[in-house]
Length: 254
Image 1 (cartoon, rainbow, N blue to C red):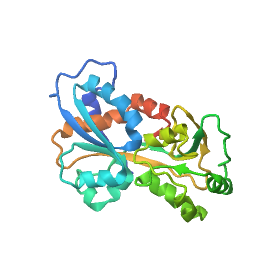
Image 2: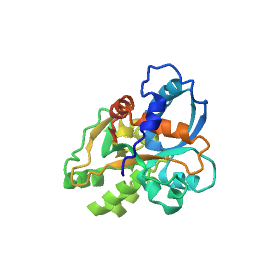
Image 3: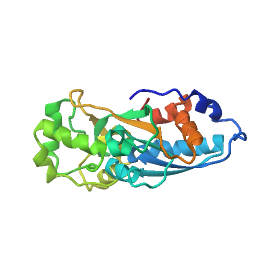
Image 4: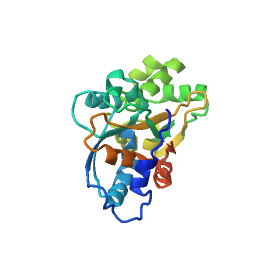
């Protein structure tokens, strides 16, 4: 995704988390759509932006199919920070302002086990295949952009059908680690940033031959009621301070 200059919006924000709330811009309430895998970092960053800008944020987190439905439903929103797959849908892309989207952060895929359980080998495609076939149960969010890639990986390994009977599907990324921690599933498979949680341990990332990063990008809605504030929030998400939060949550900024 091409990066767009947000100098003006960044200047409005000030790009400093410690500054006093802005007084030269009218306070706005932003309606934001976001990928479920961004729940951790955005919930940490939102209060920082609110303090620095004076704006209020209302963020709805959801899976890619549901985000596409929401974007195309006609319901009002100001901006989205979502998997790039949302923008690949023509009807959804039409609901955003013309121009390039802004890459915000990305994450790769990995596998977790319950804390204290033996860590299986996932370092090569053959090892990952053996581990998946040997697991009594697995869990992930099939109805999502990340879930679609997990399913594609199963197919590439030739185990798509075998995985269907083992899968304990979840509806939100945070449920994956919780299910593994409780023993409801033996392996959790998804974006690494949402797999980092209490009660579980990372067995490892996908092997290089199968690894792929899911990119989350941002854009202002074509009919945004608060376009300037929306641009300011996107600018904020590209600052070094925001980048440090994304890194701490297991993601790569930009």
